[in-house]
Structure formats: structure tokens, C-alpha cells
Length: 259
Ligand code: NAP
Image 1 (cartoon, rainbow, N blue to C red):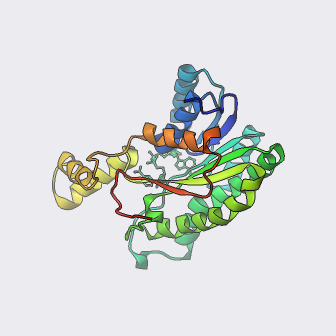
Image 2: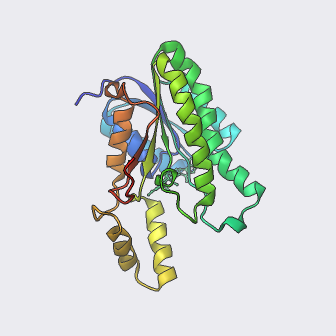
Image 3: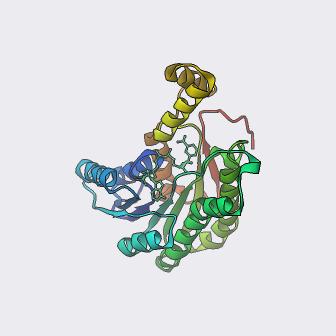
């Protein structure tokens, strides 16, 4: 399928690994030039080289923390006029409701609510002026099925989801379409760490812990960041003209939610 976005330009935040990288690769495969971002320069440069060599698109890198104002300023300076924005960042740590004070909440809100909102506010005026834009926010399955120990994440992502619900309807008439992608359990470094934590807490091997965790997903395996990226590229395509303000869950059927 021709996604109709060859030659467009995208910023993909937090994209040297995992789901962000999956989105970057799928956009590159569709012929989109990229601005990639992560904090660690080494992996970022290796990812950028792989993508440029494989897909023949232009790739610019910005090693910066996207959750800080200074980091976003660097990314925005390198980005210039872009057609597509994919918002992403690391998720807040798990814990118990009584663990967190105001500063912990501010940090989570900064990273997973206010940073993506700031990126949208910075880039949407140009998209509106040019009459075309696509924005995808990587959030979490916890938006529709909150996870008890992820109170910081649940709170921040609920705030972003509310902002998108209203804003997507305000900018759609201008040709700018915003949607959220909600990952279930995907095969990234984060899953490796969570398998290890489950193995340690239950005294079983990492392989057994991983097998048990995969067993909770109806399709029987973790999600592939490449498949996740394909959905992201579709939402950024010409074909997604009628998809506005949606929260699309990619979870292998794990959450039994009908609406
Ligand atoms: P990952 O494999 O650990 O990759 C995270 C990527 O983001 C890396 O490239 C990392 O590079 C970059 N990054 C992290 N913090 C950053 C920051 N402050 N500024 C710039 N770049 C940053 O993580 P993932 O599994 O893809 O998860 C991505 C998001 O989806 C997270 O918010 C996570 O909570 C959410 N999520 C993931 C899953 C899942 O199953 N994987 C499920 C639900 C929700 P550097 O470390 O070098 O900065």
C-alpha cells in the first residue's frame, strides 16, 4: 500500500530503541525523512545510520532529553518545518500510591503529559499554516485499563489523553490529525527488565517468568515494535484522513474491553 507520505518530514521523539524506533523505521520505509532523538548519542547514531542506509531517507539526530525545555528547544531547532510528530519518552517508575509526593508527580507530568503537549503546541501552528499534519502520541494500555502500580503513569497519560481528545477536534478542520497509540506488552528493553523483575520476585527463571507473562496475552507472544511502527506509519498516512482523536490499543487481546 502506498501511504502517500514519501518526501514528508517527521520528528520522532525517544526513538533510538524500542517502540519509538519501530515508528521511525516504518516512517522511513514509507519514504519519510527523519529527525531522531534520544539522550544517549551512541545508540542514536547507530540507529540513524542503520535507517539511512536501509531506507535511503535523510536522518538528522539530536541527542537530548525531550522531557526538558532545553532538550525540546534543540530538537525543534533541528526539526524546522515538519509534517509529522511522534511523541514518546520513557515511562515513570512503578510504586504504591503512598510513595509519591508532589515532586514525583511533577516529574511524571513533565515527561509524559507536558512534554508531548509542548511539542504539539510548538509544531502545530506550522502544520496548520501548511494545511497538513499528523501527530501520534505513544501512551499506554494503562490509559484504558489502568495498572495498579503505575499510578504516576496512569495520572500523566490520562492528562495527555484528555488534552488530545479536545485538541484533535479543534485542529482536524485545519488538516492536522492527532491520535494516540496504546501499547500493550511489547518486546523491548523494558520488557526484558520486567521479565527479570518478575523472575526475581517469584523465584523462577527469567525464561519461565517471560513464558508466564506471555501466557496472559491471548495471541501468546509479546508485541513486535516493527508491527507497532506499521500502525504508527498508517496513522501518519494519507489513508488515515478519517481517524481523529482515537486511542488505539495494540495489546494482543490482553485487555477485554469492548468499547
Ligand atoms: P525502551 O525500549 O526503553 O526505549 C526507550 C527509548 O526512548 C530509547 O531510545 C531511549 O533512549 C529513549 N528515551 C527515554 N527517555 C528519553 C528522554 N527523556 N528523552 C529522549 N529520549 C528518551 O522503551 P519502550 O518499551 O519503547 O517504551 C516507550 C514508551 O512506551 C514508554 O513511555 C513506555 O512506558 C511506554 N510503554 C511501553 C510498553 C512496552 O511493552 N514496551 C507498554 C506500555 C507502555 P535513551 O535512554 O538513550 O534516552
